[in-house]
Structures are given as structure tokens and as C-alpha cells.
Length: 72
View 1: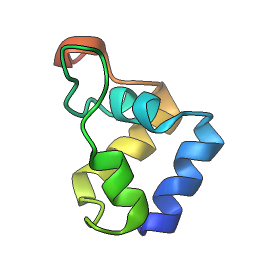
View 2 (view 1 turned 120 degrees about the vertical axis):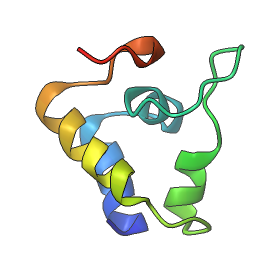
View 3 (view 1 turned 90 degrees about the horizontal axis):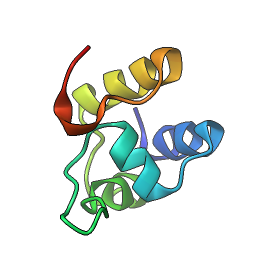
């Protein structure tokens, strides 16, 4: 998944960067904000890992991952 494809996914899903991070189960700080991974992916300063690309597909089909990393 390219940086452009990642951003298109986020916009199509209607997520802010923070919401996308939470939906994908990325690290969440105690104040509820997410790590900067989504910003890095969209800017191209970090490649979108294959696992994150697969999670994007999952979220499109089934919805956000459960909070706290509890798999259903």
C-alpha cells in the first residue's frame, strides 16, 4: 500500500488521522491521542507495513478493531 492509497483509504472511511490510528489498533497515548504513525505513513516518511495494509482491508470489511486489542 502506498502513502497515497493509505490516505485514500482513511478519507473514504471518513476517519481523521487519530480515528484511523484507533481503528487500526495503533498505539494510543493515555490522553486518547494516537501515535504519529498515521501521519508518517501519509507523508511517506515511513512505509506502510504490510500488516497495516491488511488491517485496512479488515477494517473496511468488518469495522474497527476492538479497543484494548481484544480480538473477537
